[in-house]
Length: 363
Image (cartoon, rainbow, N blue to C red; front, side, top):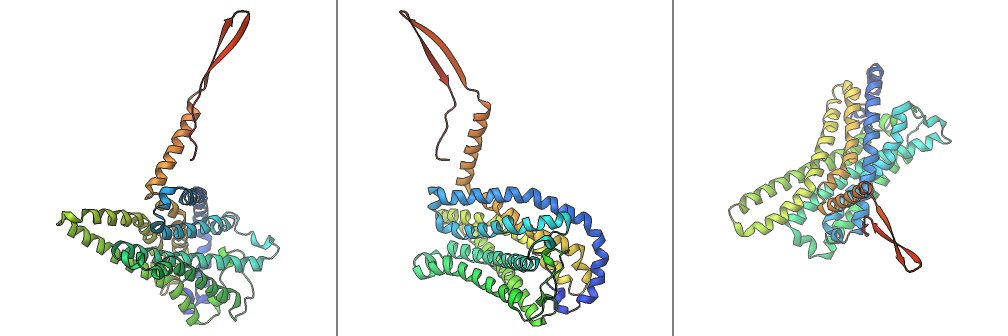
């Protein structure tokens, strides 16, 4: 989400403009670097997301663990919506800096792009919070959600729908309906600059937006991650003294490791954004090149999410490995055809012996 998180809360936009302008000349190389990184990562990320979604739907072995994978699928869909639309919209800007004015309705496009980018960033943060909470409850308080249909339905369905609807209507109001005059968009900036509530809106709205959409889900995610890690390590310590609990530990370990790579990339790609944003309160210089880098880094969460999910899906890994191995064998092993004529009286018959590589169906 390439947007200003904190400098707008001080209403010192005019004071920081000169600083940002002085740094713009040094942004050419960083912008090109980000362009090639996004381009090289986005295509494999989209392909990986599509493969995961296909196998989550088709494989019966994965269907058996549908509940434990349901929140993971939500995270996968959220990252896919960023890598399939949001990042491709940025690539033309990162390449030639200006392509929006040539559109038929650039203003409506800018409103859509800002809403989509802001909304998907916040939705993915809240989905990560939900994933951490769900994994903690499923590991240590499974009976609370499996033995009660209402709790189960609320956790896996109502909560996800509520997150999407709340974020959508929140940014629909702030960006499209907020009572401030959007005189113009800056087509030379990514996301067309900032919506008017970020520059001339009330400080209360700006702070509320930042707290609800960014800080609160990030704080809750870190809190649930800390609680989950602490409880897992405590259980591991108890299991080492009671061998009868080994089966419980195996189930805990499997579900914990499924979330571990996701939490790692979540913290790695989001914490720098918050830290630089906090530093920008006192020093607008952090809103220049440092902020460009950490904002770009936050998009790597969506780019790497499919690979983090795939790393803990052993069934899908085996299917993909089998598929790749068979294709490689089919390319390298030739087809041998031998023709042997046989004489039966005055008639000549031909017997063909064909040695071909067999294909396995169902992959």
